[in-house]
Length: 341
Image 1: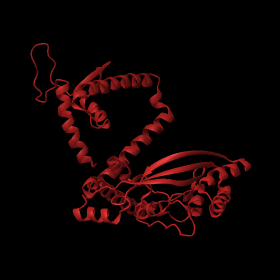
Image 2 (image 1 turned 180 degrees about the vertical axis):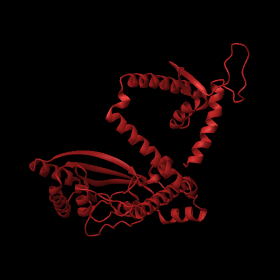
Image 3 (image 1 turned 90 degrees about the vertical axis):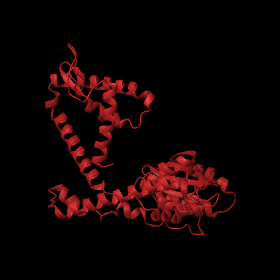
Image 4 (image 1 turned 45 degrees about the horizontal axis):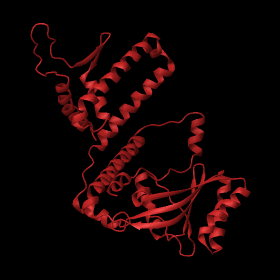
């Protein structure tokens, strides 16, 4: 959403809220004893809370049903009144001069300004054409025509990074031993207890769009009983495919979510390109220990846009244990196609 869109929506909601508060936009005074038309929603010890402040807070609530609008507006105004009372007390205690508070206010200001510029830059993202939508739909059958629901048995293992390889090797050993695959998790659990490693077993059901886009070809090739090993921030996650269910989505159903995804991807590219341009044009100097840190840092990681388009490695037929690729950025399709279930 660009800045112009925000302003437009704010004006639309402003008119509606004016009606709720029985305000007028003409600026003419009323009869004797009546207050002039105003943009003030309330006064707290003389300090004004404006309709504009109410509008901004209402926008963050998202879409409010018309039947609940008056109640929601009253609740928002009450919260702003409470906030103003707290602000007054904070100022009375000179908290607005506290170095930590001043630093937090400055940080919030920087964030708001940076976000406003990003929205300005990415506001030029164009809506995808019909051909682009059809191409995306055709190129990703695993998301649409061949969409599946996956049910996994998962074991989350808490372990240090230097022991991940040993656990992976044990999983591969148990898998290659053959026999009943349903016994792999009990055998692995017994081995982990012997290693004094903590773990937790549960079941997880995930639809195709909830999985990393670049990993879907790997998941689609899995058969019941196949395993996935994935390092996690706290250790490792071993997943065994228990069952799958076909649940395709036609192009008409998928189109609005493909549109949303493609626009989001275009916005991401615009922001990354602008960030690269700004860094190239700027004079950036790292100082002291930060200079050493910059010099010793690894080579730049691929951009999220590049990673999203990278194909996942297929599972080798001779080995059902594969490393699970990870998603590099929030995939809009997760929230989109999931709504079609």
